Length: 211
Image (cartoon, rainbow, N blue to C red; front, side, top):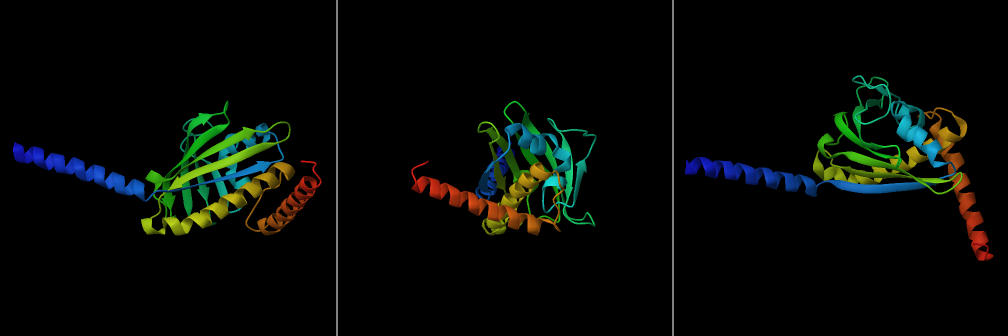
């Protein structure tokens, strides 16, 4: 009996140790962008058109609702394909869906040819109202890679991907055009120039005491 209890205790301790080690290898980052659109307009794209993310993401070739999901909401699921052969994909689920607060958590539960551990990979989407025609979109992500040592190296790539995603969202809201791998290069150039001009105007206004 004592031997059995000892084995059980060792098993529980090993489980706690493994969980703690896994958590240590979880990476995180946050990306935010102020957009020249109302919070409702931005929420419509990220929070309501959940299954149509391919229209506003430069790396996703196609996407759709799956497993009986028909629209965004608690428990809604989607698949995102990153290549035409549909061998590279993520299957994701919406949880903590709060349209009143314009936020939800996007969880990954299956990854095809992606070096991420679904158990530890999720992101909080949040849209903040900044007044008429202005809002802030935030993407707060935690992830763990497979193998885990790749985590820190992947962070920069993931952050650049989300920054590109935000540019694509801005363009899609402004024009209604579907953003693709083929047209995103020119789109990014356009918005990079616009951002530089905005920064220049702000700097001039501050220098003149207008801000």
